[in-house]
Image 1 (cartoon, rainbow over the protein chains, first blue to last red):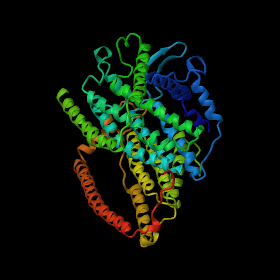
Image 2: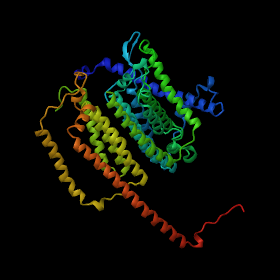
Image 3: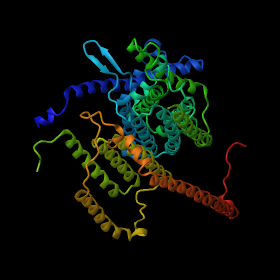
Image 4: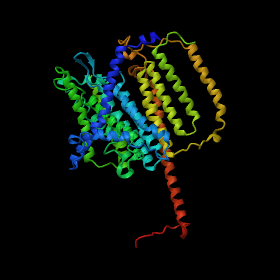
Length: 347
Length: 210
């Protein structure tokens, strides 16, 4: 038994555990803060005030909502499949948080008292595919929630979401392949380092991948079920879609959290693959500036989600499918061909 | 029986392997098709974790993306769409299939035995913390080595498989289109017949505001 304990590198484990806790807390805080920002911003766009009573500028509104989620009675509909109904939020939230271990916030920094450390939990040579694998599992949460609720609105929402996410996952992955071809690596840290030229501005979005970026952005919004692709929860047609039967309890909070963490994940992936991650002017001299750039870029994408929600109407379902299969997919294939030709000519 | 030294990886392996076997049994023991599908997803994910233990992250991730993330989503989608209920089993139609099971099982066990007994080859090196300097193209289970063998040594089978899949897609579309047109005509005729046979008692009355 002592050999077993000795075989575990305690320093490595403790460092990894601390980082995992930090990433987990970021994951937990992002829905809270995003929720407040989203509601205030939407209100601004729609000429309203938004939540402004709880705390200064309504800042504590999300915390109040969180407490409500915790203490509200948990109702399971009689006709629902109790087991799947309970399982669905868990299945949704676990893969969403599991992606966190490969978020590359930065490379190496020197911290006082601690010494040199890396700003990611781990890196491995297929990290990008790992992110795609985990986001592809996210669909089960929605599908099971829709089916397990045993209600027609939920079922329709679940069916729509599985069709939509299968369709847009294809163009999402294919859009990333162009960037992968250019970087020649599946490791997120490597991909960011490839974009460090031109005083930190040699981002893939400028350098051969503008089309890929556009396709990725559109597919990512569809993949996270947000406006204008929020067919699975379309309030005006399906009440609440797949989460109609989840009565604002902790289970609903988990579905909600999974959605926001997935948004964070695709935003981080867009930043890392197309916007150069932590790269930017002067990062070589001031490494901490990279962290600021990174969060600004991710923040831009999160803002974009709100902006789109405030300004765009919803797609019609057949238009959504047509757009995914007849426009985005061929364009993504074209982008791969272009990237491959450029890659052959350039190297 | 229990070895004196047991490594952390071995403990992980035993736990995961037990989970995989239990989930695999659950696939065939469950009567509700959606539970079977979910058990299969668990089995596939655990198998991916086993690949990770073998230092083959690329295969592990592909296992999740292709099987758990794509194929099983389609399975679950179809089960949900058709709303197959638990007791709708089709065992009586395929009764002869169960006589096929024992020989197939024996063949599988025999194959595994033969592979373990007679195939002896030194596995290619694996990139790990101990030897990080290996060229990824030569290591086992990396994206580079798999791509290399797919596009050089196995290029013909690989391309033939893709053509086969393309044929299957085109065939499926052809069947679906032909079927649906006849189906729509049949339904339209049935509806017309219903309307002709309608009696006054079947009609709905509008009650309320004049």
